[in-house]
Length: 125
Image (cartoon, rainbow, N blue to C red; front, side, top):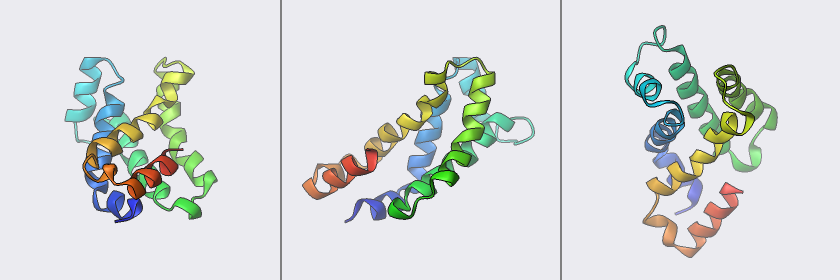
């Protein structure tokens, strides 16, 4: 099975995991609120992060057809939020790298296949 097909099949779980990992970079009380509060008006930060991660993941699945301007526009709201929340630049973008962990946690068994592993390394780079 090709990596893109597997990622598309597990999209919901991967995005949910990515969101959880991203909000865990906040202090514990804030992380708990961001995960728990589903009302977009009471939790605009959580909503923005969630929607942006979902759209970003969909764009990354396009592989060769990815539009870098779209990618930039999708990470921008999250980075802006984190910048005004006193995250340093490295911390502000750290959520991007957490996608690797979310994917690996969701495709552990399949990733041992040589072809899929090579595709995963290419995707991660």
